[in-house]
Length: 256
Ligand SMILES: C[S@@+](CC[C@H](N)C(=O)[O-])C[C@H]1O[C@@H](n2cnc3c(N)ncnc32)[C@H](O)[C@@H]1O
Image (cartoon, rainbow, N blue to C red; front, side):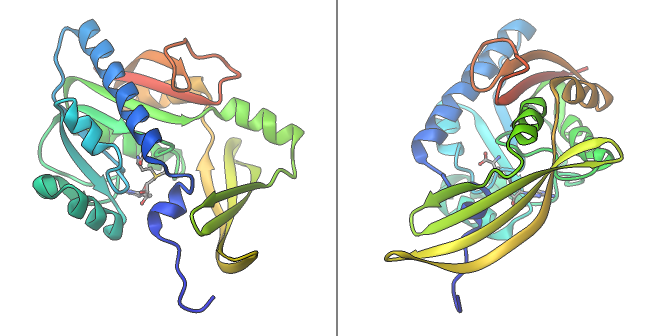
């Protein structure tokens, strides 16, 4: 449709909802305190990368953390600065593989499928760059889809189509399983529409976006290569130990 564009925050999370962000932040705070007690440290600073528009930051700051954010999308960083005026000097445009803030933090947050955009060399680069920005005993928190469950689902539902709505936008997603040199990826074909009354108007299509599908073992191994010991592997947003049928993996690593 001429003149229409999808806002970037809708592109990466169409069901974006403030309640979800508040709950995510409460869970992240609990994970940090849990790991902090185990390591006998009190983490204060958090680097969230990529941070999108900083949807978690007001909540995390209310828990007392000093929060910084990096994202490659200039528009989202602009939104984060506008929304968090008192902390606007804490936001940077950068690539998660190689940005350099020249300082270290207590916690690195890779939240909501923010890992797996590259081949394995690139993904390990992201984790190594995270390690570079952490203090010794710094905590790495990763939240990704559980690749094994995803592969099982796609094998039995090869033609699955997901229809996601947010306000006046609709995203139709057709995921496909692909193996590149034996490594599983979800190929994401996303088409965006704008709703007008009862009609959908095509806006744009993202073909062939690839997302690395991590099993818990793959994730643990790559974190180890980047210098982290995984101290907790949890099922989704819970405190239950990781199970192979979980929808998501939340891993908490410590910088060795
Ligand atoms: C799924 S969103 C998650 C954002 C945030 N962690 C959250 O939970 O709200 C992924 C983000 O990754 C950013 N991104 C994609 N590739 C990137 C890269 N190479 N370097 C930095 N950010 C990147 C996108 O702009 C987007 O904001």
